[in-house]
Image (tube, helix red, strand yellow):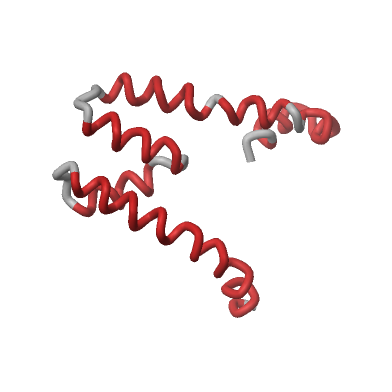
Length: 101
């Protein structure tokens, strides 16, 4: 079973590995220690928000402004999810959670 999982997810690894390396290098170029990039990768689920935050941190923007910008950046998922509401019609209130999954 584990071989099947590795075989299935290996292409995803090859796609995300260069992005992770680029993010780590970019974050370290701002003068932050390497483990801050790892911590941010664990705490921030959205990759686009991570790259946006690095640029904003480099420009000296505050955390509140980064949080607001991240909210607006990730609000695009609301529109993706709204298109799925009819697909989850029989799930009751759980459909509002499922549209973000």
